[in-house]
Image: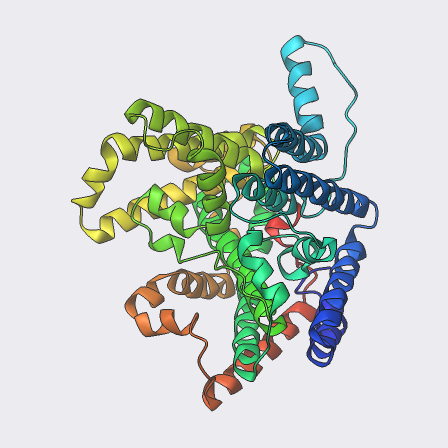
Length: 472
């Protein structure tokens, strides 16, 4: 079920919001579990057992580690073994469904023969997100940062909370459990949540879908027939699409959380205002970046063991970041691309960028980002390299930019460029207003109603409505 689908907007969401307001807190928590189950099962009946098995195994494993910690003289040494088994279980499930065909195909190419027939497994929705949340939970229990949850229902609500279930943000249990025990919905928080949801919905339906329909149409043609100018055009459009698509979803998730009495962390902080790669990744998909920092980069040694070890750790983290996004060489190349840039900045490039005028470093980052997203969007590494070759050589093609640059797309592209960061940088009050839980003025309320109505009209009149991160 998509947040932007009519069944969600007109049936599921109103029922959930109304019942959540009238049910007592304890009953409301059970109702939210049931709502999450229905939300997930609506589009993933086949693999809901994977989600439930992951919940049960991690609950039992964490409880076992908690009991071992309580009796240090007996069984304390089993905690590392339990943690390792849980990590193998979680990563094994993720690896099987997401990477089995990729590795068997890769081994077949390297050996010159087919090792095993592809299984064409359907990737369970949200498995990358809920698996990382389960891993963070069991590691935090092992470290002693949080106690093992004794109530299965509480951990079930953590995993089955539908606003963040299938596309994040990746939430730590240590912050989420406080809302389970004590959550309140006030008129102010509900209004703020509704505002965030409507803004996120409009980002997705009005802007991201407009850009995405053009990008998909262009890339349906052979790469060698796409001119270099058209390649740059769709590269910019996809850069805008993925931002408004994913940040729009995150806004909707935060808004839904507020309307239901839960605080979800911000996942974006205007990443296209970054002046270097390190800053970009502190602003983009913040929950994933912080996850890799806390559970991979720092355990590897972080920046504490010398320059060369720091560079190696950065490359490992970005390789894993690329691999997390998808089973394909294009995703791995995308991760390594950012890893190399991060290492270059660590060694010499960042100091030089800091001495450049701000506009130059912003343009550098936008150029770097467009190249990265072009590689990310390509269906394969071969197609990505071919498209980048067309772009840098500015080769002519059968399909040129004039064939796809309509007045409507141009206007929306200009709006997207302004709203992805520049407007907020020039008007700090606008930037603060997006996250301030202040009252909504009469004028803004009327604007939100019109924006919501226009978003619905766009959704009804279009069949193009995917979420980019829906199957990651």
